[in-house]
Length: 202
Length: 360
Image (tube, rainbow over all chains, first blue to last red; front, side):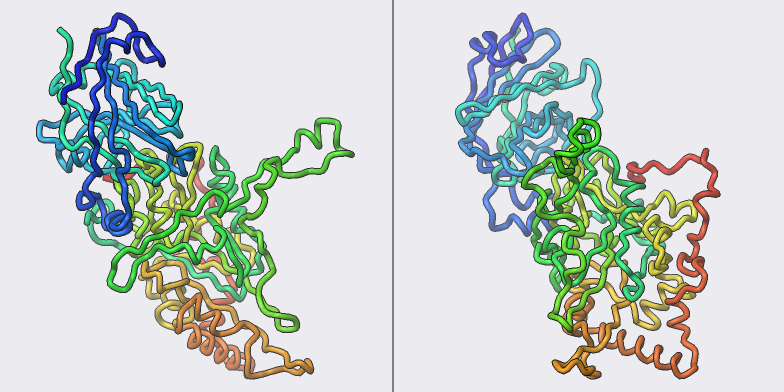
């Protein structure tokens, strides 16, 4: 499965945007982040007999302009309540050539997340070295990340926009979704089990 | 598992406190001293890092002793419940504007603005206690973070934003790193960690470390008018804490069975005797049921109380007691070991240690 990004002349971050019509979405399967990869005994013990990573599919579309990459995530969320932690999602990129996708990075092999939570209006940039091993990164100006989200008819739509330069070296990304109703947070999430190639327009 | 000790393995010492419950009058001066100093910012209105509750009672957060967490005997972490905002209660906004400045002072009552949310607070069940008249009883229990020897809160943190600092064993959190995942709140069996919904970070007692670093005792202890709070290093063999805890064994941890090695200790409360139905005194039975005290302070509470009674008898018979002299604390300086500096005498221009920076 490849995500084919289309070029847009204008900012495509707003919802709905006509620019998205040309972007063919890719349907990606998600899988729970492995329990054995969770970062500590408390989480591994308390979630050993409890299902997490309950969102199974996400639809991903992408556009870009000269300097910015826009990626839209959509998934079904029929639950009326988001719970204490809220729903959340992230798109992430390798910050190291050996960074694994299925564990959201690893010790010494980090990834960079564009991280959105329904309880926050802004997106965060986070360096991850494993499931939930997140470190917020301060960003300004051209490296900043924006997000727009909407929940309508039991379906989340979240659009990130950030620097294209982050995607360009490896041209691949991963996606994480947290189901707040199930108290999912940190490494307790559904993730793309492998990197997803992104094809950029000429 | 990655060590939670920072900046490196091993601890040079452990700061600790002893509260003599026989002197606590539930005045909440400690709670307010802490509140005024540390939790007046956005998202902190419901936070009371220091609390005093009436025992027996549901405490704060409500029914915290039933919320799990801690470790079992084999060292395995136990699942815990994350106390909610409602479990803590309190932190209400009042209609001051309407009553005092809105011209409705004679027609509108002062009331919390969140209707229906006033079902619990940090000291909600004050003085209710237990037992039936004429044998009703209660005592006060001050509580703060126990800065545990095994801080399960820090162990449960996925990104290492919590740590136990090596120089004095204080458990801290780098708020710039905290992602608000709240595993710490689940894992802490004492439920002394709060969540700041405005800033999306967990927060808890920092043992007033910026004061401590400059030789000043924590605000809760320093402000206590009953002189019941001792502060010092647990390893200081000449200090009152070591002697009360390890030598005389009259100060005990709260719920040691939670397995985290708390470093706040309590001298258990003595109590008057029960009354028979004909109102004569039952000299065999203390008013506070020993089994209840054992449920809080463990089986060693009986020996601790026996020691205290023996010391009282000695003094009543004209003898002297080093234990009682220590607990009386004739001079307040004797409470605080190396932390007797007057905060009013500090250089106001001195640069305080950054509150939220994790040592590397």
